[in-house]
Image (cartoon, rainbow, N blue to C red; front, side, top):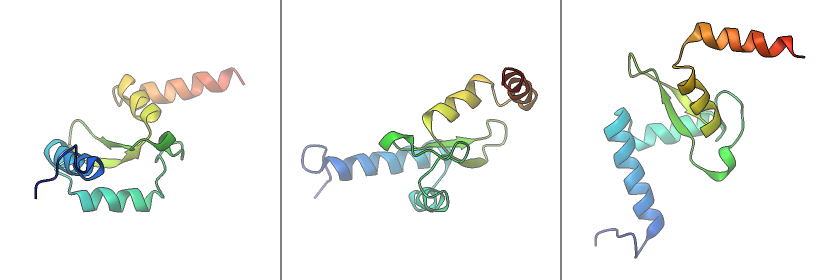
Length: 99
């Protein structure tokens, strides 16, 4: 029997997630679960649990290499800095001036 959203919403959600991560990142669901286990379900940067939401798959946009799983805030922050290490260091140095 096909998994449908109405009959089993959780199974449908997991199946959709499996397809999306395979299509978008070339990542098998089992590998995603392994990363999640290695990180103890926490963001690789801030060590928070993302408030019950799924962690984002962070990857290098140049190479496609998966770096880890991030909470929404850390993932957005990296995106806003366009993965520019120099700008991230400048931002870290800037925030340390105010303490």
